[in-house]
Amino acid sequence: MKKIADIWELPFDKMKGCEIKVKDASGNSAFDYFGKSPDVDTLLKYLNDPESYPEDPLIGDYEVKGPDIYREGKLWLRIRGWGFLTGHGSFALGLSPEEAIKKQTILRAYIISKVS
Image 1 (cartoon, rainbow, N blue to C red):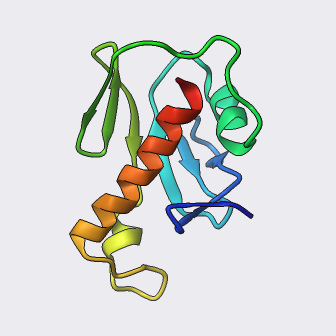
Image 2 (image 1 turned 180 degrees about the vertical axis):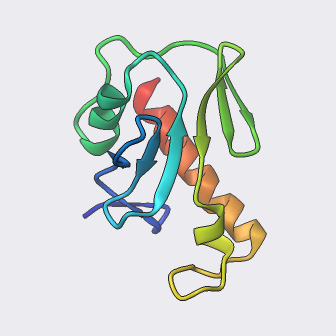
């Protein structure tokens, strides 16, 4: 399976019972999706298939603020998994905050590149 930032394993999928929360194939929290266009299922199709890109790319202003992506001034997507990345429990990676930010940045760039 393909991994994003050597962390999140494709395919992404919605968490049961919550339309906005997305996890990776290992069950790790990846992001929360607040957008309306495309719908979350279509977004997941683009992210999970290396050959799949929107016929009509999501052109618009993307602004990054920390783990958040804003599209045309509205919160569009929030990268998650900080506790998984920086925690020290048995299922956490124990990364430094700087390294965790780098990993989240790679995931964010992957998402934006797939839809724009």
